[in-house]
Image (cartoon, rainbow, N blue to C red; front, side):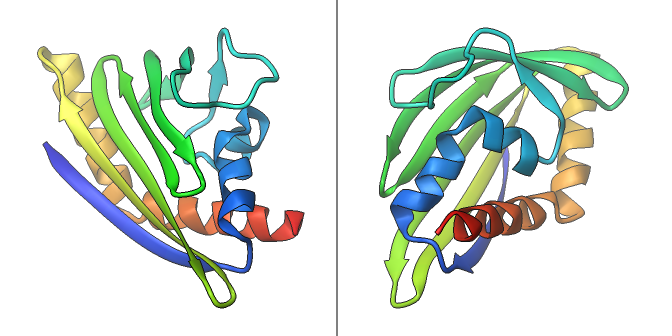
Length: 146
C-alpha cells in the first residue's frame, strides 16, 4: 500500500471546508475523476454513511462502495472498496486566516490484473499532482462560500 499526501491553506474555516467535503454536488466539482453517486442523492455525507459511486477511470467503468468513518470539524475519513481500495483522510485545523487542510490517500491494490492496473494508474495520477490539485480546488470552493 502506498500513501500520497498534500497540504493547503484556505481562507475558509474548518466547518466551511467540511461543508465542501461532505456535499455530494460540490464533490463532483473538486474530485480528480468524474463520478456519480448511485444511491445518495442530495444528502450530506456523515459518519456512518454508506454509498456507491461509479465512473470511468483508465478507460474502464468502475464502481466503489464508500464508507464514511468520520465527518466533523476535524476532518473527513472514508474508505472506498472496488477494483482497487482507497483510504482517504482530510484533516482540518484552524489557522489565523482560515484552515489548513491535510489530505492523504492510501491505495490498496486488489487481486487480479485489473486491480493491479487500476492501482498503478491511480498511483500515476496521484504522483502527477492530482491530490495537490484536488485540495486546492476544495480550498477555493470553501473560501468562495465564505
